[in-house]
Length: 103
Image (tube, rainbow, N blue to C red):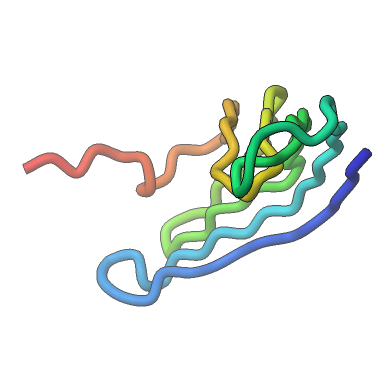
């Protein structure tokens, strides 16, 4: 069993998004499903986890967007390789991060 909590954040450093910031806090609950399998550096365990992000903020000069997120199916091969995940996010205000910037 694996249980973690952690905040994360950052901000733009140049260009039109230099004043923008992102902050979130979430937790993960996971289970190890298999014993170690595989040869050499591929040896690892299959893990399953659920991620939840109850707080997600995008702060811009013009407005602030609030949201939540959940990853109900986070499968990971515990050999240090990139995990396979699916996620869902929801925000309650439009913000420039997702607006079309067409020519």
